[in-house]
Image (cartoon, rainbow, N blue to C red; front, top):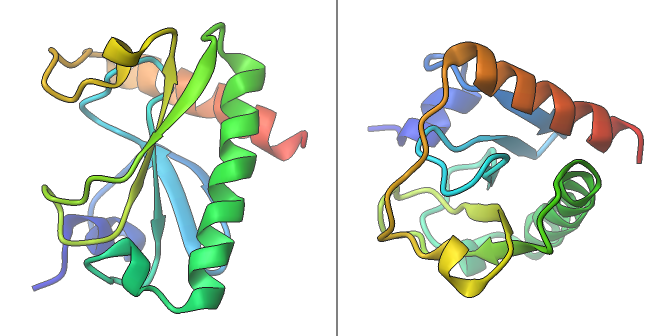
Length: 133
């Protein structure tokens, strides 16, 4: 059965998409640690990040670099944290989280909640910053 992320790629499940390339997709995490918390994924369903083909792996990392620059541009956070955990969804993914300290990227802390309108506004701001790079 396809992962939830594959179903997002295929358009079966909606997401607040921020950026897309031929092989990668970025969208807002629906259970964010911070405003602007993104997930960057390869469109190809591979469970473990380092099992990706080298070309797709490199493309995904460059994609996340550009996304981090966009987040940095629109966020007031000191840094953009990056985490690869990969236990909850069997589809390689990278978390990009605006942070001011190490606790800000602690996945055991309570998640934020936004309305659909707020999610769309956040996605739009990041998308604009990404496209301006």
